[in-house]
Length: 89
Image 1 (cartoon, rainbow, N blue to C red):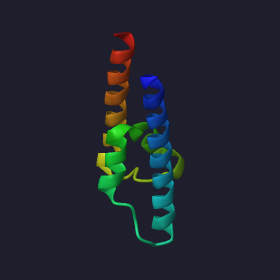
Image 2 (image 1 turned 180 degrees about the horizontal axis):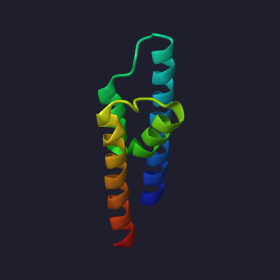
Image 3 (image 1 turned 45 degrees about the vertical axis):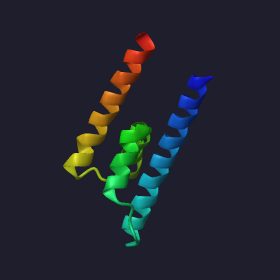
């Protein structure tokens, strides 16, 4: 039961993160108010790293900034390592 909540949380946080990357890219192109970079990275840290990585790739967003280019994949690797550790435990 608890695992179902974790899966639901991860799905939701990644969908939200992906959507925010897309929305921020659209706002950047149309010169509107933007989503803070802290929020985009924070969402990756709290479980949305897959959505952030896919959003960066699909929308070509934040790929020039080194802390996104290196940080998001690093967060993703760390989170996957933790998940694999708990699955194999």
